[in-house]
Length: 346
Image: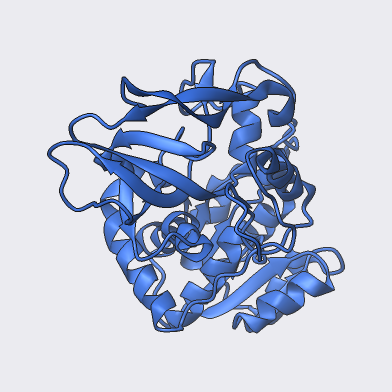
C-alpha cells in the first residue's frame, strides 16, 4: 500500500503476518518500515486508533479464510482512523490535518498508511467514535437494510447484541421503528442491550433462546441477524416468520474449525413452507452502499440519536492490538473493541 519515495531515516511500525500459526499473536510480528511520500493520487495518514476484527485476524493467521486468498507475509488490520499528514499530486478532497478513515485490509494495524485516496473516506474528526461508525456502523446499517430489508413495525432479532456490531444493530433497528430482541450472555450485557432500546433481551446462558422466541413471539421473527451460528442460528431459523429473512453475518461458534455436526433436516424444510430466506452478509461485496451509510451514521451520531460504546479494556500501541484481539475472542468484551495506536490518555 505504501508509495516508493522514502523520507530519509524516518520510520513507522506495522504488524505483519509472517507465518501460519494457531493464533494471531504467534503468527504476526511488529516490523519497522520507512516513511514514504505519497505518490500522485495518494495521501499519507498518521493513524491514531484502529478497530479489532479478531475472528478474521485469527482465521488469516491459520490460513483458514477461504473467500479471499492472502499471501504471507502480509500487512494486517482492516479499519483505522487518523490525520492526513501529506498529500500527493492531483489529490482533491483531502488536506493536511483532515481526518481520514480506512476500512480496507492492510490499512489498519500500522502507525502510518500511505495509499490511494480510494482506500480512505473523510471523517469529521479522528476519534474512536467516527472509526466505529465508519467501519462497524456501516456493516450494521447495510446488513439491516440491504440484506435484512428491515421495515418499520417488523420484529428484529440480533445475536451477540452487546458487541461492537450488535449494539449498533439494536439501536439502528429501534430507530427504524422495529421491535427488537437482543441475545446476549450474562446480566451485565443484557442490561446494556436493554438500555439501547431492545424490548426483550434473552440471556442465552440462563434461558433457552428457541423456547423464549416460540413462547413470546408466536408470530415469528421478521429479520434475524446472526454472527454466532450454532444453536443461536438454529433458534432463529426455527422461529423465523412467514417471508422472514435470516441474515448470516458470521459464525463465531465455528472459529475452532470444528463445526457442530448437524443431523436435522436440511434447511429447505425450515424455509420452504414459510417462504423465508437465509441470506449471507459480506460487507466487502456491498461497497456501493458504504458512502451513503457512512454519511447517515455520522448524522445520527451528531444528532445524538446513536450511541457508540467501547469495551472497558484499554489497548494501547501496536502491541495492544494483540491484547484487543484476545479480549474480543474471550467473549468478555462489551461494545466495540478498539486500540489507541497513539496514547492520548483518557
